[in-house]
Image 1 (cartoon, helix red, strand yellow):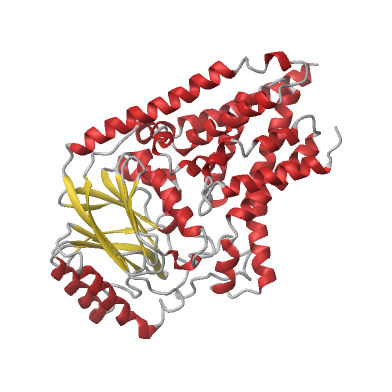
Image 2: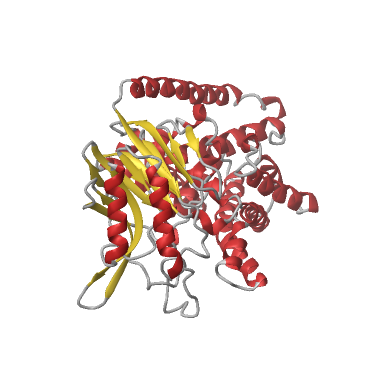
Amino acid sequence: MRTGLSHWAAAVLSGLLLAAAFPKWDQNYLLAVALVPLFWALRGQSRKAAFWLGLVSGLAFYCGLLYWIVYVTYIFGRLPLPLCLGVLLLLAGYLCLYRAFWALAVNWGEARGFSVLWWAPVVWVALEYGQTYIISGFPWELLGTGLYRFPVLLQAADLSGVYGLSFLLVLLNAGIFLLLYPPRGRENRRFNHLPVLLLILAAWVGYGYYRLGALDKLTAVSPRIKVAVVQGDIKQGEKWKKEMVQKTVDRYGELTAEVKGSNLIIWPETAAPFFFLRTPDLTARVQDIVRASGGYLLFGAPAYELTPQREVYYNRAYLLSPEGKVAGYYDKAHLVPFGEYVPLRRLLFFVGKMVPMVGDFAEGKVGGVVSLPQGEVGPLICFESIFPDLSRAQVQNGARLLVNMTNDAWYGTTSAPYQSLAMAALRAVETHVCMARAANTGISAFIGPDGRILWQSGLFVPAAHAQDLPWLPGGSPYTHYGDILAWGCVIITGLAVILARRRRNRK
C-alpha cells in the first residue's frame, strides 16, 4: 500500500492526541482512542513505512509532552534557542524510537497473522520496560500514568505496576480499532472479540472497586502519623547565591513553625543549599528549627565524603531527630543525566552539567530507608519517583511511607510539575502506602495509598501543610512479585521473533 498524506496525518494526530491526554491538558479520555489513528495508518504498510509512521507519531507525542525541555535548557542551561530546540529533538528522537519499533512490530505481526488485540499490548509493554532501564532509563509518563485521575482504573497497578495499565489501554485501543476497521474479508466477524474485551474491562473496573473498598477498610483501622510538607518557594536562579542561603534557611524556619507538632516535617530537595554538618553556623540554625518544631525533620542538602582518592559528592536527604541529631540519611540512587553527572564524559567532554556548583554526584544505595520511631520511611529525591523499582525496593525494606523531595523550580509553570505529580501517584498505588511530596516551588502534595491526591499546593507560593496519614504496612502483589507482566511481554516478544525466523528458515 502506498503511504499517503492521510497516513502521515493520522500518525501525527495519534501522537498529539496522546500528548493531550497527559498533564497539564489532562484530556485523559483520549487514552482510549488515541492509538486508533496510528493503527489505521499502519495497516497494510511496508515495514519501512510502518517504522517511519511510528517514528513520526512518537516525535509528535514527545515534542508535545516534553516541550518544557526548551524552557529548562534556555533559562538555566543558557543555551541559544536553536540549541534548546535541538536538545528537545534529540531526547524526543531517542524516545520515539520505541514507538517506531512498536509500529514496526505491529506491522510485522500483522503480516504473520498475529492479532493486534494481544500482540500490540505485549510489544508495547516490552518496549516500555526497555525504556525504563536502557541508557539510564527515562520512563517519563508511560501510557498507564495518564489514568492518574481515575482511582478505580488505577488499582490494577498493584498487580502489575504501571505496565499493566499500559497493556490494558493498548488492548482497549486495539479492540476499538478492530470494531471500526475489521480486516478485509472479516467484516461479519468484527464483533467476535467484543465479549472477551468487555469481560476484561469489567474485570478491570470490578477489581478497582474491590481494591478501593479494601483499602478504605484498612485505612479506617490504621494508626496515623502527622506529616507536614514545607514549600519554601525559592527561585532557582537565586537558590545557590551566597547571600540567599541564610534567607532560605530562615524562610523554612518560619514555615516550619506553622506545622509545629507534626511527627515528621519534610523540606524539599536541597532545601538547605549548603554542606550540612560542615557549615557550623547554618547547621546550628537548622538544628534550632527542628528542636523548636518538636518533630523529626527530613530535608535535602548536598553532602560530600573524603576518600583517599578524592571528594565524593552526594545529593542527600538528612533525617534529624527532635533533639537536632542526625538520625539517618539517604543518598540519591538514580542521578539525573547532565544535571548531576555527565554520562559518557570521555565522549561528551564538551557537555557540562546544569548544576555546576560541585563535581559529579555519586549514587547511593537502591532501596535505602530512614527510621522513625513508628517505622521506616522511603525518601525519593527528584525524578526518582518515576522509577517503579526504587519505591518498590524501599517498601520491601520496610518503608511505610514514601517521601518525594524535589525541586521543580527548573520547570517554571510548564506542564512538567503536573506530570511529576501524576507519576508520583502511581508509586503509591503500586506499593499500598501513602506518599508525601515536598517540592521547592510546587507541586507539594499528599497522596493516599489508592493514588488519590488528598491535598496539593499551588505553584510558586510558599506553603506549609500538615496531614494525618494512615501508617500502612505496605506491600502488594506488585511489591512482592515485581515486573512479572513486563518480563512476560519481553519473553513473548522474543519468542515470537525467534519462532518466526525459524519458520522462515525452514521454508
